[in-house]
Image: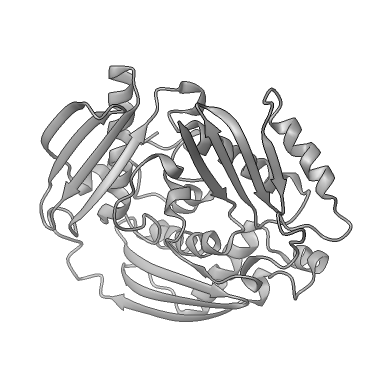
Length: 343
C-alpha cells in the first residue's frame, strides 16, 4: 500500500503564524492560567495582523503584543544575523515586523466558560503499534525527522518542506525543498540526506525540484494560522476533523479533544496490540462525547458515549501551563512531544 506524508519546518510561513499565536498565548497563560484565547495570525512580508478575542485577567497593550510577535519570530531563527546572511529581499527578521492588533479584550468578570465543551465538533486520532515511531505513522515520522535535522543542520535556510512516499513501508520517494544561497551546494544537501537515511536503498531523491530556492519565509509566501493540519497531525494516514488546535486555549474542543483522541488511540493500541483509529464528537455545553474506536481493518473495538470534562482535561494535560509554543515546534504528537501528558 502506498502511503505518503509531508512536513514543514517552523520557518514555513504558515507555521510562523501558528507559532506567533501560541507564543502569545503562553504569555497570557503565565499570568492567568484560566485565560480564554482565540487569536488568528496572518503574516506577509514584514506585516503581521492579529485578530480575535481574549478573556483574561492578564492584559497586554498593542505595543507589548507587537514586542512578543518580534520575539517569537526571532525565536524561530529569523534574526538580524540570519537576514544579513540572506538579504532583506530574500527573508525576514523579527525585529523589523510591523504588527496590527485587532483583539477584543473581554472583561475577566465574564464567566470562564460553559459546564461542557465550548462548541460542537468532530475529531479524529490514531496510534500505530510501532513503538520505534512512538506510535506515529512511519512515513510521517520520517518526513518530520528529516525536516528537523535539516532545520537544525545550518546547511540551508529555515523554510523547509519534506515529503516521504512509501510502498508497504519501503521508502520510494524523498522530496525536499530547502532555501540555498548560490554558494551552497545541492549535492552537499543530498549527501547529508542520504547519510540521515542510511540503511534505505532504492529511493528517488529530489532536492529543490525547480532548481533554485532562495527567496523564502513570508517574503515569498503569506502565512496564515491553521493551514498545516495534516502536517501537525498524522500526515496522509488519518482523517482530520474541523478546526485547528493552534490559536486556542484548553477550553476549546479543537485543541483538547484532538489531544484526547490521540490519548485514547494510544491506550487502545497498547491494549489491543494493533493500529487504532478514534473518532469523537461533542456538543456545545455538554460533557458527553460520542466515541468510535476501530482497528486498521475498520473492525469496531468500542462504540458508545463517555464523559470528558474540559476542566479535568485542562489539568490532566497541564494545559494551564505555558506549553503552547512547544506544542507547535514539531507537531502535537510523537517523539518530539514525549514530555506531554497525552503522549
